[in-house]
Length: 146
Image (cartoon, rainbow, N blue to C red; front, side, top):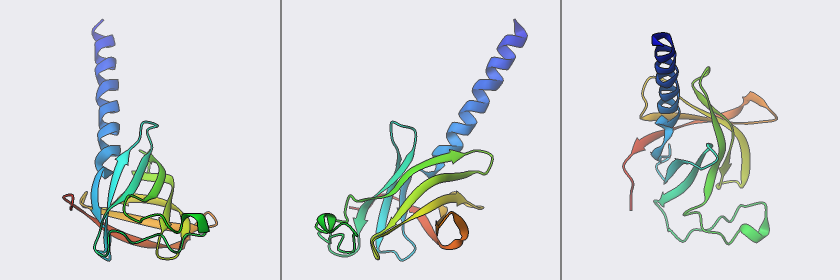
C-alpha cells in the first residue's frame, strides 16, 4: 500500500511539474519592436494561442497585408497571431504552432522557448520545415496594457 501511495505521489508531482512548466508561457508579452503586446493563453483543447491585446499605433489599424482580401478589414487588435502550440517537455519548447506576421501577411511554422529568464520569450518562425531558414525574435513579459 505504501508503494502505491509513493508511486501515485510521484506521478502526481511529475504531472504538476510538467503542467507548471508548460504554462510559464502564459501572460502578456511586449514584442521586440515594442509596437504591440500579445496575450498568450491556453485554450480548452490544451494548445497555446496568442492574440494582439495592445497596439502602440492606432487601435483601429487593419490587417491590410492579409493574403485573403476578405480579411483585410479585420482589426489587428484582438487578432490571433499565434496558433496551436503544444508543449514538448523533452525539449522545453512550445512546438507545432504557427505565427502570423501582420507586417507582411505571411504565416510561418513556429516554436518558442525560454533560455535563462522566464521573462524573455524566444520565438522562431521558419519555412518549409527547415528551422534554420527563419527569423528569431525576442518578446519581454510585462503587465497588461490598456
